[in-house]
Image (cartoon, rainbow, N blue to C red; front, side, top):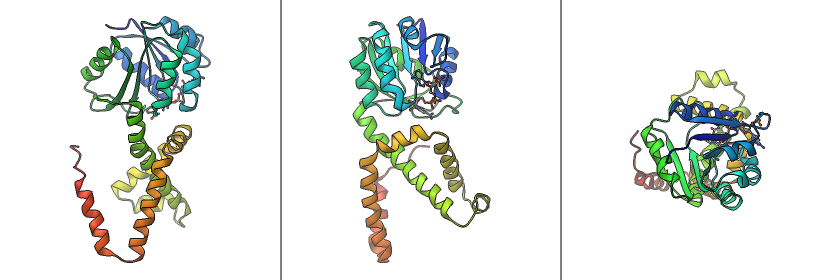
Length: 256
Ligand SMILES: NC(=O)c1ccc[n+]([C@@H]2O[C@H](COP(=O)([O-])OP(=O)(O)OC[C@H]3O[C@@H](n4cnc5c(N)ncnc54)[C@H](OP(=O)(O)O)[C@@H]3O)[C@@H](O)[C@H]2O)c1
């Protein structure tokens, strides 16, 4: 089964434009809507075989509530929201269509999907899952099948916690008596990556705030871990510190 027409709600936005280029590149006809487009999101929903929700996280559930009843029962409703539980539950509740939650683990500046990972959470689907998987795999994407709960738990570390520490580094840079160009003059390659990521979270405040607030449990646990580490450093307990480093040996090296 292949869709005749794919609709992107939020198609005027950053990821929406990325998706439009991707689907058009795969020879699909694409319609887009935003709040100011002539075509309304409800009209788009009723016209398309696949309806993709790509709006800011804070608006996602409301948009799904609004357009869900207009998505045809034989169509597929999917979202690309960075958190999965709430949007997938809303798509199941407010539509009669097939439902698949997805999360592309890359941003709108990524030139090609080749080698990039897309998490898929099949929720109510028969005919559309094989189409979606085949589309992604044929473009050499990596597909990870997950549940909304597992995805959100993983993301609270993968995105929530890692950006929490990047934010803390950004604040430490800001608090220091040195300016940014002095930091660049002293910057390692790794530190330059961190500075770029600080810039990235600055550009996406709504998305990162929501991801942080969804990661509260992991952030709170990691602060307890940090307290333990702080104590070890305060006590100059090298032996304990080495033991902790040795435990990290269990983390396998990534293939990249
Ligand atoms: N940016 C990333 O790196 C990234 C990566 C993976 C996943 N995501 C996910 O992708 C989604 C979109 O993120 P983005 O960065 O593309 O956001 P964005 O650039 O702010 O785009 C949001 C889009 O939603 C539209 N919109 C806002 N409110 C709407 C409403 N009530 N009804 C219909 N359309 C509405 C906006 O259009 P108008 O303003 O014209 O109405 C715009 O087209 C989010 O769920 C995010 O979690 C983002």
